[in-house]
Image (cartoon, rainbow, N blue to C red; front, side):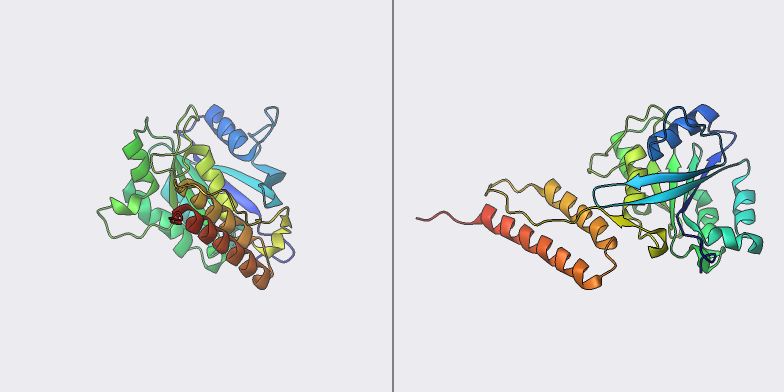
Length: 261
């Protein structure tokens, strides 16, 4: 349950103080949340940030913090005294450059030991460690496939590079700052955030083509998910999803139809 009258629209961004310099912190915040260059990102709270995509917009507040000892940060965040803060946090973004899989228990503890307040929040680990090869990016993006321990991963991992050049891995998944932004786009925001719908998906019937554009279909489905989550009216949302599915079926049928003999 959120604090009375307070929207669950706060994003907590936490940096490893000893590993992520202030200049890198500032650039990450500016690029991720489209802050103006002249904005003083050293402030611990930045209010009224407009988060906007093709389908909705809402106002966010950034809570910016640092840690020297990750375990100590987790312990303090899970204290009963922090329950009111946790109730208004929509998501936590942890930025480090030395994160290792043995820290999974601490990350999971942020969710499991902090009470029901965090059940609807997301958690992302952004890692600046090293220069990534394509196969490394895919591994970090899907860590459960290569893990050797028994910990279930609650947080999602997004590799970052200090030159902010990464956008997608070889599988077409968004990484870098675009990967962080995608988490916010796909998050199921609490209705108390006063989400403003901007558009809705309109089914189209593209020309027949023997080459099926799989990436376009994936993008349509991703857009559909974002759009679906912005509709409070479930019947309206279902009709949009059905229309999209029908448009994809029509495209597939047209692409694979046999020519008349």
